[in-house]
Image (cartoon, rainbow, N blue to C red; front, side, top):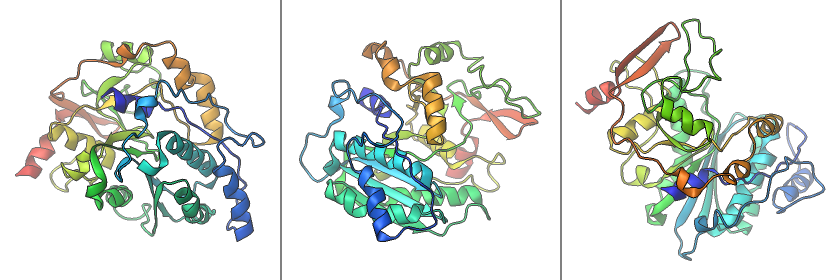
Length: 352
């Protein structure tokens, strides 16, 4: 378990600045891609991060020289050209450390007129040259029209499909890293939201986290891992066997059975609990931004992973897991309509 928790905290970020354009010719792509695949490009502006602690994370390196995939990076991306240098640079640096031949990157892209598609298409050769597997597909799914949650679930499943289609390369320890940013309500292990939101929908209490969960609040204040009923925050890792052996997939709520709409990540967490796999933890040493600028701001405000773990002992990461989920969890169809219901109500109906 510790291996999985530490993986979330790998502090590898390489930030490069990239000018926006509607398209790129071959010479432009060559000039742009070169910095992506340099281990350290000191002449380029970037988010300055501490070097990776190879001692702390050494046990994450792949040792077996077989053909299995040990780390599978999955992303759904749309119109994010300005973020690509930071994102791809970080992933590549992580792959170099973990062992690129045991890593795979799967990206689903859609509706990106800013040049995102061009870059994601062009990096295939570079990634394969360093030894990593790369799966890229463009999607015409438009999440702004129709059933948004179902379409988001479809996009997530598309990103995971290359791994699901290669069960012979999946081991008991294969780890999936889903890295696209997601905005969703989290639920503490007591079934409550992380902070109170009144009927008018204001977030004035966003800084008063875990008001009804003293133990969780204490661990969060010390940036120690804690258990949650449901949480999905930008960067998530989970065991590939949840897909290959348990058959979990992202989905939308069942129409007519669950009157409270939920996002596909929250439903995935509920399905994990339903299958007896509720060891879901939040790693507060990790903090992410939606852009290079916001990334700098959050690092200045909250610090880097290495800042926190240098003051901690590995044993502090451990905690006692709650085996059973909370009997009732808070639901919010709208801000002014909040109530608690059995956590598995719709799942029991679905099973029937």
